[in-house]
Length: 113
Image 1 (spheres, rainbow, N blue to C red):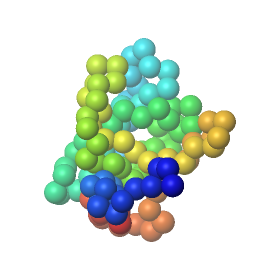
Image 2 (cartoon, rainbow, N blue to C red):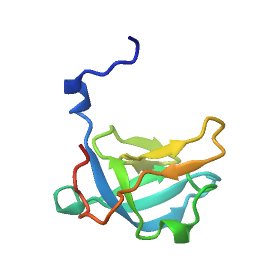
Image 3 (cartoon, rainbow, N blue to C red):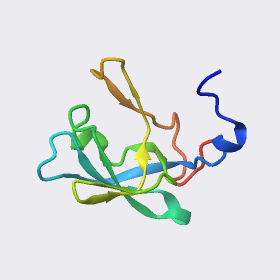
């Protein structure tokens, strides 16, 4: 079956709970926010660029707990190093984007397994 992932491959992915602390606009980027997130004591603060501007206001994002892929190779987006990726569910036509969030409160940095 195509697209099957072996368990040892899945174990390489480090997903953590993070809390959005700061949301900034990026000059020349209509869809991107620059997010400063707290991923707990072990990992610390990270900067993530996310194309969620048309789906979430800054007010909705402030202090929101989300799930972040922390060991993704960093990449430059509009001159900013994005140090991870947040997880979201996306409708087939991209009309809806919903952030994946913990159901209950849990410490920043908690591992997703």
